[in-house]
Amino acid sequence: MNSELISEFKAGDNTIYHIDHPKFRASISKFGGHVLSFAPQGAQDLLWLSKTAKLDGSKAIRGGIPLCWPWFGPATGKNEGQPQHGYARSTFWNFELLEETDSKMVIKLQPEFSDDLALDFDLTAFVTLSDTLKVELHSTNKTSDHQELSQAIHSYFSIANIDETELGGLENTEYVCKVTNQTVSQESLVKLTEHSDRVYNTANSPILIDDQQRQIKVGGNNHDSVVVWNPWAQNAAGMGDFDDLGYQQMVCVEMANTQDLNLAAGETYVMSQTIGLAD
Ligand code: BG6
Figure 1 (tube, helix red, strand yellow):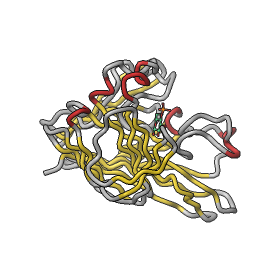
Figure 2: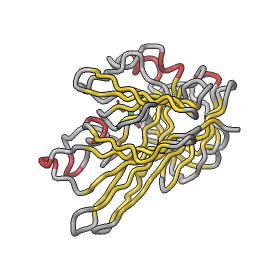
Figure 3: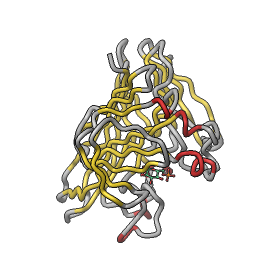
């Protein structure tokens, strides 16, 4: 990517691009096609990145925006035995700077999947950066049959303190709690007080993350679920790439398709997430 606003850094086999644009600052990793940080100019980062994240391409990156594709969660059925959350987050991607103006940048990202994976879908992502950040996943069924796709834009948001944080926009919905395997009604604002792993069955957006110091607005398009995750103290301590107290300063809010999305032969489906500070 050729631009005076972009500087390039090596981390092992990986390359990380830092962008300093009049409207925003951001970093993007070739490994994972992964946005690591994003802030409108003058603001603190909207995204959380673990202090112990591996950035050298040896492991999926803990923090920022991992892309879960072509499945979300554990691999099942014909994918049994394959990695959790699919291949996209642990593959190198090619980047092409499509547009640079005083107000925005648009980058096209394509994963370098090995042919051996024999994937049913093609994937192209577009990242549009301005005082907001939009990530779009374009998936095309390249087989001659219907195929099932699940996916998530697995954003880790930076918050002042989980104890003070409320999520709005999920009231009056139901979620599946993956910790207890129960379906629960969410009546009021979401406040997390323990290990939480929830799939809200809703296409609602935006979700508002309010940590009492600022509000982050998370918009979505063509998702059928919103995933909310915080591992809490004990699980965080058990992960080698999750700094022990980091769980207090993060919450994942993920726009996702988890509910039997089926694409016809040749069909393209676009799911996206847009994040920014609320006015
Ligand atoms: C969330 C899932 O989206 O991602 C959780 O709902 C999972 O079940 C979490 O633990 C983190 O996954 P991973 O593979 O990055 O540790």
